[in-house]
Length: 213
Image (cartoon, rainbow, N blue to C red):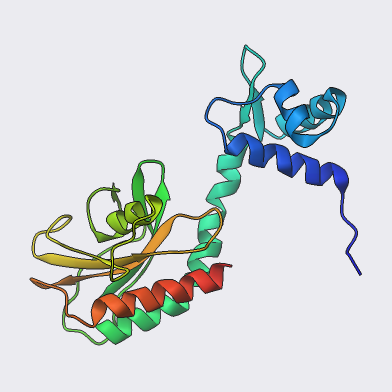
């Protein structure tokens, strides 16, 4: 038996998705055509979404995603972090290196969860909240490779000394998680990454992706 749903809420969510997929916004007429409803319905939907700051309209009347969406988005990080922690703990303990979950935040890579190994004499200090350009470090480069549809042949990215002198990194992108761009990786004090680390990172990224679906 199909669960009852709200047609109005469904339409409002479709509006947000349509606006999120465009950089230049959409007019009432364009939204009306895409949704297959009349302009009066679209006006009402936009007015309601504007009241909650989820949509804004510019001087030309084009609707765009509002800043309220960003406030909602900030609450996603704790949920994502919680889902990723078991896989990150296992990865850090297995490899003996600092494990992290990194997500895209604008033009930067943002570490949202970090787990340090408990049994090593030393490891790289890497903190949640650390930011770096997407084109530097294994975490960001793995994300960019996946974004361009050309993930590295082994499924992971290796780097050395790009974010911290003497440190090497390995990361694999999250695959198949709608609405989230990110990667799982490790960082260690070593001249190179041991051969078994790359495949292990890929497995951890798969575990996190499964937990987020």
